[in-house]
Amino acid sequence: MISIKRISAVMCAGALALSLGACSSTKETASSGKKEEGTGYPTKAITVVAPSGAGGGWDLTARSFTKVLSETKLVTQPLTVENKPGGGGAVFMAEYATQHAANNDMLFVSSPPIIINNLKKEGNSPYGYKNTTPLAQLTKDFGAIVVKADSKYKDLKSVLDDVKKDPTKLTFAGGSAPGSMDHLISILPAYKYGVDPTKIKYVSYDGGGEAITALLGGNADVIGTDASSVKEFLKAGKIRVLAVTSTDRLTGDFKDVPTAKEQGVDAEFTIWRGIFGPEKMSKEAKSYWEKTIDKLVNSPEWKKEVETQGWELQYKNSGDFKKFLEEQDKQVQQLLEALGMQK
Image 1 (cartoon, rainbow, N blue to C red):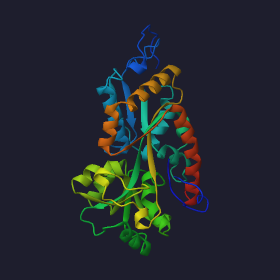
Image 2 (cartoon, rainbow, N blue to C red):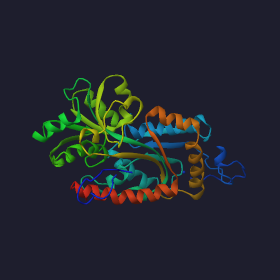
Image 3 (tube, rainbow, N blue to C red):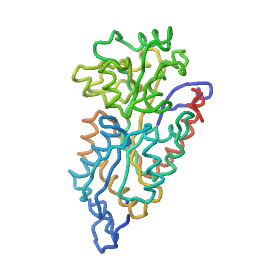
Image 4 (cartoon, rainbow, N blue to C red):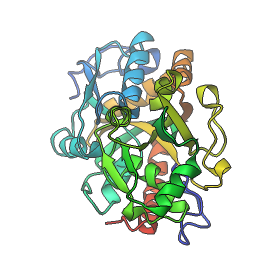
């Protein structure tokens, strides 16, 4: 869930935290890595869409998801990843909801922006998670405040002090549209530090990969993004991570990075990621994916992949994921109201 503690009086007591093929008499089941009994589904290649450019959290999740499903032979049909950037996921969401509402052969990856884009004031999308079939939450990640390795900024407060003096002095950037996830990650620490978030200069890019490129190219001073997407740049010594938005320090490559809270800034933000199907997904296709994903998340191959990517495994099945999204919808609404960004 999105966890953003005491963001306003409103939130002070809470935490923000495919088509069905011709019938078949096959006896193989999804749980054995094959086809749904009696349906033949899937009969075609499956596309998993990352609604962003290459290199960001959605892209990495989609590629990890398809890789492990193929390697473990849980899915025997071909699996491909397709990038469809634009509007922090909003452009693809409109296409999916209106043109692929019964396309059982197309799934997609998303995270909080599927809710945020639907509820925010600027550039909002009329489509959201209710125009999908939620299949599963797979992982959780955390936000990161990042600068170039040679930046003069060595800690979060030094950035916030300069922004407090002049909110337009620094250019913040992220891989999502204004009012969406990376924007919220970028401005949340400043907001908690007493800076008017509406005055901060924020530039949006189509995906975390483009945001990182902008940072390294000198077109942004600071980026707010998901920690896992900057892991390789951190290991290569190209960036400095000033803070992560987790409750406690992360392990591995991020073990020396302090949390925002450690630095006196009460900014926490959890990024969940999940898999969605079309709104009018067939019962057979939904059943297939529920069984297959359950098998996936319990496999040692998936657990290893999650660890390699620097994520944390947090699985919710279809039913639990849908309930969770309903709760998130209410919490995001409250957050946006606190920031004056609600529609």
